[in-house]
Length: 254
Ligand SMILES: Nc1ncnc2c1ncn2[C@@H]1O[C@H](COP(=O)(O)OP(=O)(O)OP(=O)(O)O)[C@@H](O)[C@H]1O
Image (cartoon, rainbow, N blue to C red; front, side, top):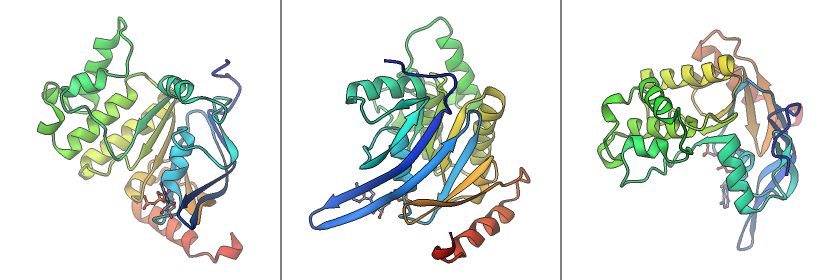
């Protein structure tokens, strides 16, 4: 199986529809999403609660199957892959930072970070670098139960980056962090994209996070109805005004 292609965009979402069925009710979480994300792009997804942001992120990671359309990661259509193939593929290509940190309680911060990485000559050095970048040096040997929410979140981010994935998918990556720590993570994500060509996609409600992105995609009722460029001005108020302005547009005009 050819898992990657140099010429394909890292992530393409084509006419994706996702419905959840529960008893007699059907909820359409995604109703025809089309999106192409380029290599080295830091893209943020915003939208009201229930607009489909997390479902889209899960579909991009192959964590949820789709009813129609397809998701291509580095040219590979995820839909025909078995669970085992998907897990292997994800491990190689995608770093996940999700709201439930899923840290292993019996392992130290450092052991949690190392967990997904195959042993290699530079692994110890990479762990040290990530501990430094995420300001966790002093928490290296602590288990998750002895870490604050923000520290656990930073361990989860380090674990997502340890295999140096081409794509990072993050759901509210700064959700448990104070302002300064959140800005530090945004800067790290931006550097990964701009300086190292990694593709970063983050879901957030925070203009403070969105202001770091190259592109903000706005979801409404299961569709990506609009997008804007925050222009690098790092002005959260400007981003909030742009976002709110798009949300106020009548649906028939989008
Ligand atoms: N497992 C599920 N079963 C049934 N319905 C679901 C499931 N997951 C999501 N939904 C529904 O799909 C829609 C989109 O949910 P999703 O979590 O993607 O929205 P969101 O934009 O991420 O919301 P939030 O900002 O509140 O996290 C919502 O109506 C939600 O209730």
